[in-house]
Length: 120
Length: 331
Ligand code: HEM
Image 1 (tube, rainbow over the protein chains, first blue to last red):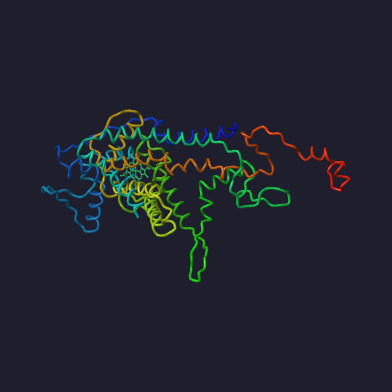
Image 2 (tube, rainbow over the protein chains, first blue to last red):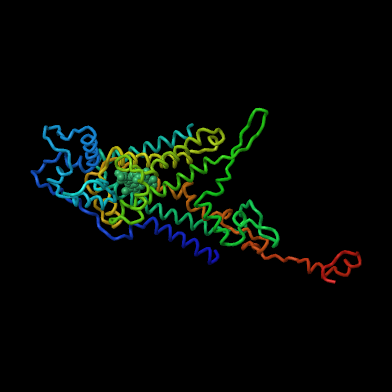
């Protein structure tokens, strides 16, 4: 191989290697999922923790839809507890927007709630 | 048909293995930690091996495929891209191939009509679907860096924002997801639909298509329908890239299906047609300058042989040639 070909081939391979292992060179640790800071009594949430971790966005979306469009502002859980459909209801136990932002920044998922809603 | 069914069965089986193993046999560590490490080593090692192997193969002759005027005399206009005459022009040609699939744009179709008449026509769909598929797959893969890097890099966030700009569905629909699925589906149907293409299609053509389709379908399923806990997935991935062998609890089995199919694809990659990713840069028919009129390229393993040049020939026979009225170069 001529010297220029050598540089091209190994330069290209180095580029490939760097692109594939890009994440390996980055700083940072895996984050421990922050335990929900619930002010109310323990298992007080509208759904189980497992459900909320994966599906909270769907629940909030449903709340928005049914309260704004259909005027149904009260959420009734399967075991009969009633909640007002409002971010403020969440914040009663979960503090503030900071509770959302924490994980959302880590996961690189931007919630668009706060385009309209503001913190108390 | 069998050529397509076997790969399909293989992909379905491969998808079931991690699902059963994680859900019922508790083999999360194998599928979440060990196999991904093996896969990345095989992928990188295999890829480098293949490229180095190509690089070591001798290319004694200039064999670029051209379809334009070669550079020759000053007053003949050369076609710099179609018949590159130096390194930079050849680079331009390779890049236009890699980035825009330039030669595929020339794709034509041949049809037999009543008569019988053979008709050739323009056929850009393969080019369009191929380009759409490759670019959206690149964006999808780059966007995945958000699972591997603790602090999501700016360019990944930018890609996400642009990709999700429609802001419909929850979480926001990525345009590239739609394009990727549509384009791969087209590429599969293309192989079924035309008899000639069906005839030359092999299991090795269907398998990667089905694998990519399955990976994308499971990914889309996870994002929009059957949610997985993205936080734990990210913990796992960030742990892996820092060689911290801890498996977080509670990741849905569907994720392991996605990950395992990706690992199989990565290990299959260096030994399959997918190596065209490296091969396109290494093809002598594409990356050589067409300059054999300008430069003499000597085959390096030519035996030493004694050549007789015309000048020597003329030196020996000049007088006789003059007598016979043959033209000579030196008087
Ligand atoms: C060839 C490589 C891969 C392809 C083509 C692929 C494709 C996809 C696609 C099309 C989606 C739908 C959502 C989106 O576009 O982001 C997705 C989602 C996802 N992928 Fe992949 N993927 C690949 C590799 C991986 C790897 C290595 C991981 C390991 C972390 C992974 C984890 C995920 C997760 C967790 C989701 C769900 C995202 C969410 O819920 O927002 N993928 N994948």
